[in-house]
Image (cartoon, rainbow, N blue to C red):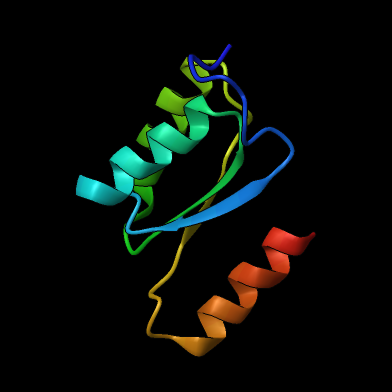
Length: 84
């Protein structure tokens, strides 16, 4: 079970730059509050590692998406998959 109070349960958050640094820490914080996460960065392997860590704390399974936020086509695809 996430260690937060679950105040984001039932919500979805897209976290860009989630593979490291501030983005990674924000993703972990949001996961602890129970939100469904969409993890976005250019490199997929660090996102997969973060997804494993998020599952280990009992948070919902995150969607992992490798994309460059400067690429409109990739962002459209990200949004389509998130809404699905």
